[in-house]
Amino acid sequence: MNTIWIVIPVLLLLMFLLGTDLNKGDFANVARNKKAVLAGMTGQLVFLPLIAIGVAWVLKLPPVYFMGLVLVACCPGGSSSNVFSMLAKGDVALSVTLTALSSVITLFTLPLIMGGVAILVSQQAGLEINLPVGKLLVQNLVLLFAPMLLGIMLRHFRPKTAAKVNKVLGKCAFPALMLLAGVFFLQYTREIIQHFAVLGVAAGTLVLLAMLCSSLLSRTGRFSAGVRRTIVIEVGMQNAAQAIAIASSPFIFNSGEMAIPAIIYALLMNVILLTYVALIRRGETGKHKI
Image 1: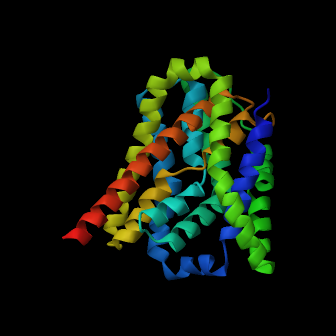
Image 2: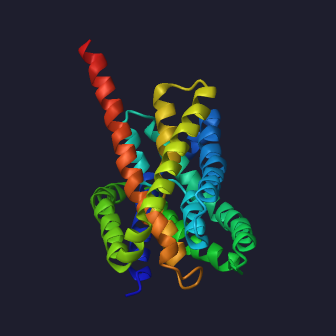
């Protein structure tokens, strides 16, 4: 079974859903919150890939998993980050802005970073790893930018319809991701079980270090608690579906094994960030009781 035919609909759904969330105000938010947006983008586009490379290097991951871990770190923020920011009483408008910006910017930064990592891994392992940058860029434009643009257009021209569609698709997004994870688990059960210990450590460390670094970064900007929480969530939560689509695409890497770090990352990412949100809400509840 070629899982790419499950990955593509899920990814299209998520990006269209993101588009229906966006409006002019979200992009105007960039000008109003320059420092916060810059901090979030720095954590997302610079710190996260560097941390992933460092973790993969220290743990001496095999080439396919080294590439897979860095790949998920190079992807944009996940659309679920907006919901997590709301639950954590963060700045939802900033979260949507950061997700939208990273979704556009990583169309170009992802091929560049992964091209460099492919060279690094090739030299380290004595292998020849070719990254078809042109095909990757085209696939990203088709699977990411196009559905997001359609969602934006629907929101602009038919706002009531967009709101109804967003409500329905919002309920389907998480089950669709779980279906995707389940299919990959069934197809690569042996590999996942065999490497879960080291990949679990790698993915978990990546999430925690990303959250820690983004927290420290946001504190240097002296932002409000809500903004700091949003940046932490945005940097820690990645679009795992995109990483899976790129790894398993027959036009790019055509490797289901390379998608395994993204599957494990998605699982641990949700567990860790849900715990983070729960601790915040518990703390807020405690304050109100005092």
